[in-house]
Image (cartoon, rainbow, N blue to C red; front, side, top):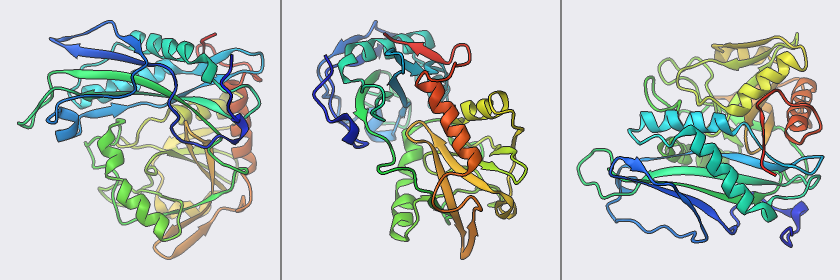
Length: 340
């Protein structure tokens, strides 16, 4: 039986659900893992995660589809990306197949927390891993914990989608050959001051440039970016320091194979921004967040799609991808993991 929740008025925040998945790495191997009702974590005061930020995470969602199934969207790609994060941070990889199985277990265990179809709400799923054993010298921990918790969340945008304003900041997000391409907690920690500063200045987010030359667009603190040209080509920045967004990859596939649009992944120079007709941030939380204005050190760049609503192409991309996720549109093979 579904939980007694006002699903249509849920915010985007943490609500404790009944079960979480927990697995421990010790003596060179992972245990089988288990579901737990305990949401508290106890560890050494000198744990690797607390001393040297040895942690990474993922984010995905479970949806109730139009035909009543509970599904997840491309969890295998989250497993792959977490494996890459672990390798970069000298953490033991949680086996990709077991990752997907653990996602399935924890969603099944919390099935009554999955919002009904049509409410606009979803069950957010947060897999994460951290160094749990004591470390003093600067080195990887010897023991780790992999966990997954879930929380029901409402639509990212309350009251409808409104185009946002980005600024090009004086801060850098990631260094060449650094960790910008992995989903490490430390990447998000260093972005917090920049986003708080942006909000104080009246902007919604930061549009970071490459730190080597500060001439090319990369991404924001928590999302990839897509652009649309006047002749409806969907373009996304190419860089080795950008986190490979699963939503972005899916949108580029949808643009090409569902909407018949040309797509490009290439370097995008700041001087090009004024030439695009649409811009949007993409990620798990909101899928697509339209951008109405970009401010680059006093230069105001307005996107012709306007500041009131999504652009035409962005709207088509959003409608198609969410239609696939919610079961209204047939999905490519392997994209949808049916839980129940």
